[in-house]
Amino acid sequence: MNPLRLQPTLTLRLQLWAVCALTIVWLGFVAVAYNTGTNESDELTDGHLASTTALMLNQKTLDFVDAEQLTTRVRAPSLVYHDYQQTLSVVAWDAKGQVLARTGDAPIPAFDDRTGFSELQLGDPGTRWRVFAQWDASRSRKVMVLLNMHERADLASDIARQMAVPGFWLLPVVAILLMLAIWRGLKPLYELSDDVARTDVTRAGRIPERYTMREFVSVVRSINALIDNHAATLERERQLASEVAHELRTPLSSIALQLKSLHGPMDAEERRDAMAQMERDTLRAGHVLAQLLALARASRAEFLRTAEPVELGALARRVAADYVQSQLASTHQLSVDAPEEATVHAHPVLVELALRNLIENAMQHTPAGTAIDVQLRREADAVWLQVCDDGGRAVVVDAAAPRRPVSSERLGLGHKIVSRVMDVHGGRFESPPAAAPFTTSFRLVFQLAGEGVAEISPRPPAAVPPTAPTRQRARAVT
Image: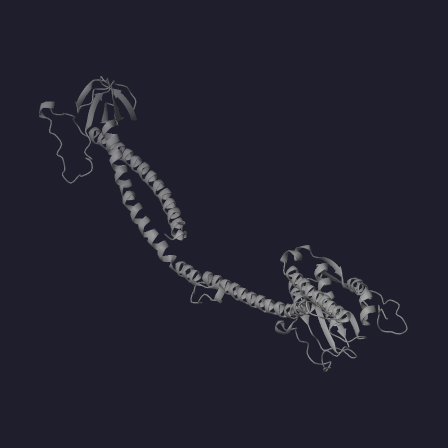
């Protein structure tokens, strides 16, 4: 059995809540109807008593027939639920309290001057009666009309039930129609659910945009955007895995060949060369793995929550100072050109990671003696930090040529790390045309308009050495 069918559904939830709300409204309707019916029956019987009393008072004589000759009421067959023909009793007195006439089953109550509506307990055993008494205009005759309270209660109950009974038929009918309406109204949601269930994310399947309702259109577009992003992420990861495999294949193959050669005959110099080559290949493989770990580290979104103000000029000078010993070995000339202060809101570890990758790539892919310059500038809407070199890795292009973003398809592993870091900070990784005398330039661009840059503040020009009148340089020369 499909476990999804055992889970509660939105349709059932809506139907249950709708039926519960309808039941509460129905109970309120029945209560109001019953109370209204009771009040109406009381007003009806009281009006009947008052009308009968007025009719008796306006007659000249009150000569009722004897009980043996009393004509019984005729039951009307059309009165299905109850009989509105209540049994009334009438008693008439003169001004001295003498009974002039009486009719009906009610016992004769005690005479007094009170008039209007009241309830009396008469007979043995006692029976409650609803009465209305009134004097005539000359106060020579008093008439009282009595109605048994049991008949009054039966009439009230019948009227109240007749007003409440339609609610008993209305509840199930309205509940069924309401449940059908909810089911029909949620049909587009069922279709969307089926489309989502059939979507194969691993194959970048998209949900068809065939829904016309505004709420569903936004949901479909959001899901399709997530699917597209997921597919793009998978493609990037596949490319990264391919590049890592390619970067590791060469040193690992070389290590395997050198190990095999060590088992064969060779002199001491050949053995030293083989060992040195194995050491270089091992270091290269370790460098690739370190870059891979750095790339995974730069992909963690929680680093952005620990961002802080970072002064890029100070960071660039500190990073450049760490490569003094490397410059002595490679004879590269590393300098920092940062004439102004630029503070950005970023994660210092990630920014330093990106800058180190650019510097290391420049040192590894350029000839000995190449000049490498770290430059910091600010523009109207951005501040950028770039690494330039004159090692001839790229042909010299026109300085007026447009800047181009670094394409992920042609990035090495180190540049992929830099690109990922700038994505985390909402910036850009570009390769603009290098200004003479440099031939290659890679740039980190931090946006000013609310995309990670917190503050840009100029700093007074610092003293510069005579050999570089327009630039502040920190150079290590062998």
